[in-house]
Length: 420
Image (cartoon, rainbow, N blue to C red):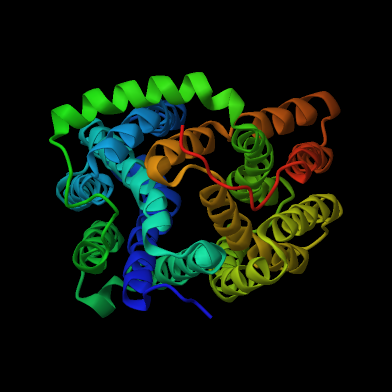
């Protein structure tokens, strides 16, 4: 049973439902393809890939560098919700602006996407940090899991609708597939803005009534961040968790980012791969809820380690895949654990960090999340190059999962938080 205020909890969790439409429809689904075929059709394939990579890397680098400072500023000024809504507003506007970018305007598309991706990631820093203000200590696992579960189902529903729009634009009184994709971007902006309203109305943070001005908050945040970095080595459980998280979430992100490429390298049809990814979204919905219950019953750390084991086993098994049905089974296995491992990582971290500095510490958390897509793809690339085998390359990811699980084993799940 969740003991926290239910209206506040569901209002907070609905933001995951809201912004997940961006990750599915825009980031993972339509933008990469539409950029190559519509906005950057005059560029070569290598050139368009380069600029898309620049946009993604640039957004990740900016927010990774700024997140701890912005988090400290929000903590000191009681600005977590205000800053989340500010970043969200910018992200919604940028997403809607994609509708207005004309064919061939690839520079404008890159810039709009860059600012939208920065704003999306920035808003997530403060959204994650607000969990300590909306949930009781004993409810953190279930509440975090509820957010991820709603995110998977919400993002999946709108993405499914948008896919139908592009396959049958005439059903929606649209001229062609290109117009359907542009309207899909606009639908994400509307969806995102609409389902953010409950957060604005019903979620409140501690210290919100006595907040500082933005300039005073920035000064106070800078001093707080300096003190935290100086004292971080004394918070053994925090930095130990962050090391473990960096390792195993790198494996998780690598599986997510490289799955389609791996399937294509084995000769599977692209329609099979897209169908499997969509199936994963809907499996992850009930699985994330179940993980929240299991975390509350057996402890978040145990469930995370079990999820890591499933990921490692899936990597080993995937090296033997022979047909499309095998890929569907792999997608189902990943769907069972991908929501839980992310949700319980968030709640376990929230449990061990100082509550009054949650945004600052989630800044570090999100910073590592941004950098945690480096070693996995690099290991896969090197292994594939040296062995000439795509199947062998997937096995090296098991090393990241094993290292992460070993470090996580030494993290105490229910340590008492101390302010620094």
